[in-house]
Length: 258
Image (tube, rainbow, N blue to C red):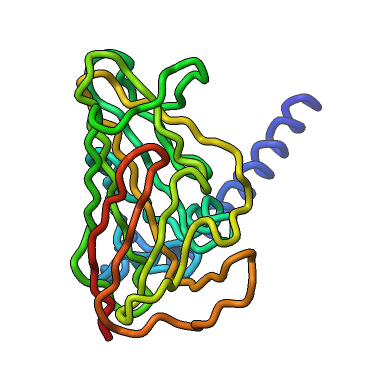
């Protein structure tokens, strides 16, 4: 009987607890519960980031293109030099310079590069000197007129009519260059104050030519390195005279203009 009584009491207690839980669930249904659906907010009309990181708003640049080119040129025989620095160096402070020289022809032919004094192909000391009647000299001005500040340039061409090569001496005292002014007075000469009297033998090929370019720096000179009478050359017609030792003298004229 005691066991039966305990079971009846246990059943009564559990029945009352279950009803309470169900009542709480029903009362909760009447309160605020979670929404049945979740809807997205209004869509944005633009991109989330309107400019590049770092605050820049720019277009991507295309790759840089690249190109290459080349240009080359060469002067004719005895092509004149254009560098004032090279001119002054070769002048030795005497007012003139000898530019690029070249030799063309048969026996002993070659081409010389630029250098101090007269350029061209050096000749061995044992080579015979060129003699009058066997070679021809020609002198010309590279331009007829030279404006203020422009340095007159001249081309001396030596043609050897022999089969065998010979040499000429283009040293400052062996080949004398003289500039005469419009009054036919000496204005400048290469032997007035030469920095050196050393010989400068240059080869003239057999049946060929040797060409040299000379530049006058518009300076005056006086014998024995004295003080020149003239200061600056005036406009007018000038004469250049070139006398190569053992050969005839050649001359030509040019104009200095305002």
